[in-house]
Length: 536
Image (cartoon, rainbow, N blue to C red; front, side, top):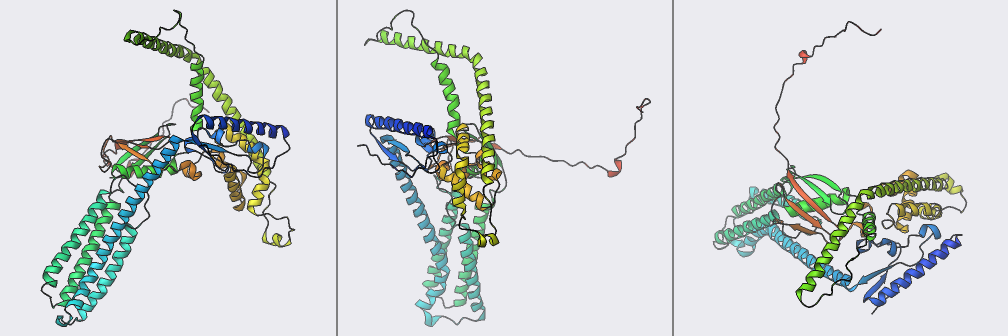
């Protein structure tokens, strides 16, 4: 069953009746086309507000999903935008939700185990001190001054251990890894065995014999706390300090556009190296823009579309049930494909001229749109004046806040900005709402027009865009070696998401041998060389 819902906003049309008429016709045609598609395929149509751009599966189809004419015909949110989801998409979304539920359960289970182990560690020294007073208080010897001093030592050491464990272990998780962290699991097992060993010794030597020397029991609890502090120091070395020294240089290549970055990493496992690379990716790599790749694909399709293959021998042989007919048809199809490849190779000699002129024309258009955009934004910013506190008291009622000021000057630059974004294939990365928010931010902080335009003239890192554009639901780590094994020279693994993948190659930083050579400062002597014929 097809379901359809519409989000519509108030529209304020400018004086361009022709542009509005064309926009209405395009909207009606698009609506008719999607209605036919929805009738022919079993799909569910979900309408989204136009202020939320869609990337993910709709990044390439951004021009059909989002209305790109907001700069020409409107000054506010207008029209409707639609996004169709097929049954396969719904199944994939359901699978992602099930995977996320499994990851959440595993994360909460790990957190519960950590809390239980932490309570066991911190309550054990206190239990060592309290149990003798509860079980055989009449047999205990009196605690002297030295014993009472040990109480203070235990209290402060437990406080320091509590703060240290909170700072090192109880931090917000950065990601969900496919396997357990080996060093952290080993430390947890070590602490558990250590506490169990102390409990066994305490039960055999103190509880069964009901030891009367209470000062010795307190010293036993102090030794446990000291050992726990040393284990925490070992955790700092293994979890934090060991990976600080760079040992490997990794090359990260994005599969779609070939963007490359290099990073230095220490002694890390493959899964933790992948996590470090993803953290750098969101800050260093420009946002992935599939629209920029459609030009080369359309150019190749255009060249292949101009090729036709004719059968000079007549009709194709009919494929019968026996094998010879099928083999003849397959051989003919194979020969035709080879003929098309050969013809495309011959036409390649002249295709570089087309590519050269296309790129030159595109650069000319970008420079032209950029110049118009810069002029429009500078003129728009001249209509805003920041009022001082004295002027605010004397000013009339025509005073606007940053949001209202941004909405007032946005129509004068909207058309130029919209054309520039469409020319540079960035229209799906910026919605009208996000542009107005950025404009209000620049007005609030008294920023220049150049500062406002920098976000659109230069592609920024992935984190600078809205969350829908950069936040992948799940990354898949593909590696031939175990993800818990350490990095090695020549290790290769992939980080794959829905739209692209990151190919990571590892090289070990070579051992550097340095030698020293002493130069005497008094050896710097020079002689002036004069020639017999010199210019006067």
